[in-house]
Amino acid sequence: MIELFLLFIGTALVNNFVLVRFLGICPFLGVSKKVEVAVGMGGATTFVMTLSAIAAWFIQNFILEPFGVSRFLQYVAFILVIASLVQLVEIILKKVSPSLYQALGIFLPLITTNCAILGLALYIPIKNYSLIESTIFGIGAGVGFTMALVIMAGIREEIEFSDVPTAFQGAGITLLIAGILSMVFLGFSGLIAI
Amino acid sequence: MNIILVSVGSMGVLGALFAVGLAYASKKYAVEEDVRVTLVSDVLPGANCGACGYPGCSAFAAAVVDGSAPVNGCPVGGSETAARIAEVMGVEVQADQEVKAARVICQGTSCNARNKFEYIGIPDCRAANKLKGGGKECSFGCLGLGTCVNICPFDAIKIEDGIAKIDPEKCTSCGKCISACPKSVIQLVPYSQRIVVDCNSTEFGKEVKNKCTVGCIGCKICVKACPFGSIEFENNLARINYEKCTNCMLCAEKCPTKSIQAQFEKRKKAVIIDEKCIGCTICAKNCPAAAIEGNLKEVHKVLEDKCIGCGVCVKKCPKQAITIK
Image (cartoon, rainbow over all chains, first blue to last red; front, side):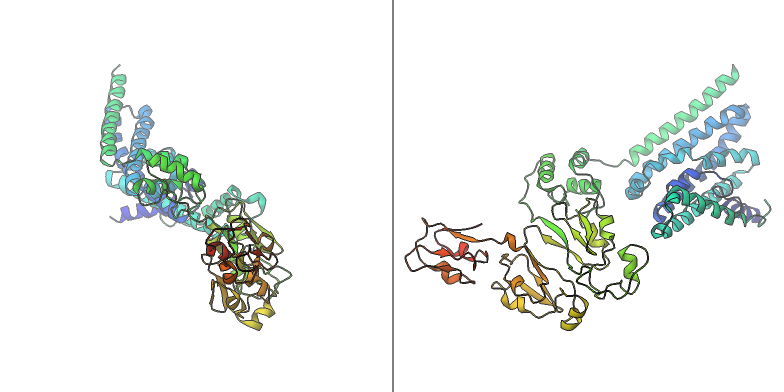
């Protein structure tokens, strides 16, 4: 039980997918202008991550490994799962919250290409997680991703009225902030030995 | 061979499974979309300014098809857009609403208004307003740092002499500047209105005079001078009732601080059509400026220098012998 909790903390904070593993930078920079949109994006990604982690575990252990096709079908199978899940999220979101659907725009289908989710799926067979561990891993990754996005969105909202030098405006200052955030999260290392 | 069969088979089955699941989900969570929503959306100007009161053009289109928004609800598109939307919806267009334009209700230019302090900071009125209400002595006046200029999607606002000035030709009354202004000094004024009380200060007399030379001091001279009772007075500030106002400009003539701005050159004049006049003197009796002279049963004449163009005579004349130009 305690290992599962430590796994969750480890995935969300210590080895944060965005700020420590440097995956999923595209939506991190693209959807972090407003806190509400960032929360929405984080929620959608967490949903996809959790379900893909579970699906990836099943496919890996019941299809890919028994038939020994893992080494070349892994990517294909995982992307298939992720793409279908994202399509499902799109359909449901359009019905449930059209405003969030509009706000996310093109970035919603781009969750498919979010390397954090594929990375998550690929880590599971590497680390040999059980089903429960995979699920917690997925949830933790999603929570960490959401945290990184929301923090970045909060900071970007704050500096909106600041006097940023022309050369740094836009992507420049954002990447600088991302770098500093990453250094901050490095402070978590050694918190848990995972 | 086996491997190939297994790979194709397993991926095929997986794919088919997901396809069925997605097809089911898309049916179950289908969003009903009326074709007319897209058609109306195409007709709209697409500025997403929010003047209609809906968040963006697509939301307005959805509301029109829903029935909750009027067909002529887009002030930016005007009557042309309203007609095209009506075509799509298959209904009649209602009468045109009064065209309005935004106006900065302040004349506190750098010559007229005094400063409390020199403001050095973020060049934004909202930021300046947080610092003791901004650098102007008068706490109700335009700060002239250009928040409205930046937010206007139609480039209708410029800063002149330290205050913002809106071009009524370019203004589409979308309302963005009105909500952005921290001093709430921008208001919607009918496009045809030629005379406006250009002051936002609710202070009285000497205080106003010390802070700005063209402020409304609350003397009420205009209220008394108006022959039609169209000036309302609240909180030491005169406000013209645009529905009652006839653009006669008498109030602007009488205002001691010149706080009321009037386009005198556009002042209308009444003209009596000689052939139709029967000399009944109804017009002369009703004229508030005593600008019509003539004897009974003789053709009357309008004294141009006295005429204020209020239009009372036009309404009163039983033979419709008077026109306003």
